[in-house]
Length: 234
Ligand SMILES: C[S@@+](CC[C@H](N)C(=O)[O-])C[C@H]1O[C@@H](n2cnc3c(N)ncnc32)[C@H](O)[C@@H]1O
Image 1: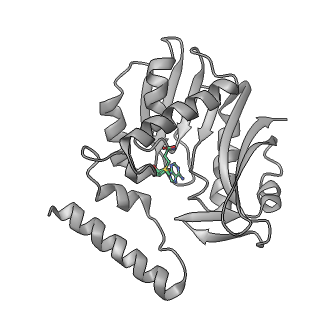
Image 2 (image 1 turned 135 degrees about the vertical axis):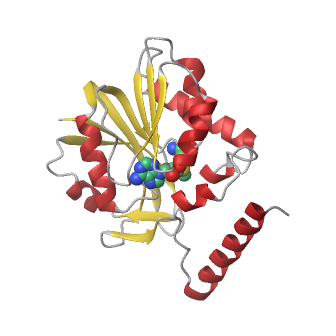
Image 3 (image 1 turned 180 degrees about the vertical axis):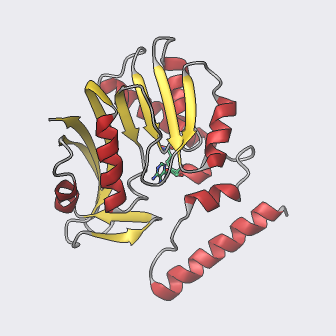
C-alpha cells in the first residue's frame, strides 16, 4: 500500500472517529488534503464525484447550466475554486479563441495539475488566498463558484463575492451555490460543509452592490437546501 493511500485511510478513520465521538464532521483543509493526494491516479474524488464517469457527467451538466444562463463560445469566464478542472474540461472544447478562461484555487497542487492538463493559450490558472482573488486586469462575463461557498465561512464568502463583483464585465453575472439552513442563526458546520441562514447571507452582502436571484434549489437533510444563486450588479 502506498504512503498516500495509508495517509488517506488514516485521515478517513480519524474523521469517522471524530464524527462518532462528537456528532460533528471533521474540518476539511483542502490545501492539506490536496498535498496528500495522487491527482495523476484519481483527480475526481477529491472534488466530489466517486468516479471519473460522474466527473465527466457533472462537467457536461455545469456547462449546460452556464449555456442556459447565456454562456457563449466568446465568453470570458473566471472559475474560482476550479479544483481539478471539472468546468475547465468542458470549456476547453466550448470556448473559441476569442473566449477566455481563468481558473483559481487555494491549492497549488490543483493549479499545477490544471496548468498541465489544459495548455490552451487563452486558459490560465492561478493560486488564490482563502479570501483574496488574484489581481486580474480582465473583466469577466461569468464568475463561477461551484461548490466553493459550501466550504467557506460566511464572512469569507461575502469577501469573495465583494471582490468578484469588481471583476464583473458590464452585464456579467456571478453564479454560486450555498448550503442553507433556515432554522439556524447565522451559520453552522465547518469547512467540510458550511450551512448558512439565507437572510444572514443577504445581510452580509449589503453594500456590495450585488443583486441576488435564486435560480434553483435542491433539498438536503433536516430542512436544509442547496440554493443556486446568480448575482448581478445593481
Ligand atoms: C468541492 S471542490 C469543487 C471544485 C470545482 N469547483 C468543481 O465544481 O469541481 C471545492 C474546491 O474549492 C476550493 N476552495 C476552497 N476554498 C476556496 C477559496 N476560498 N478560494 C478558492 N478556492 C477554494 C478547494 O480547494 C476545492 O478545489
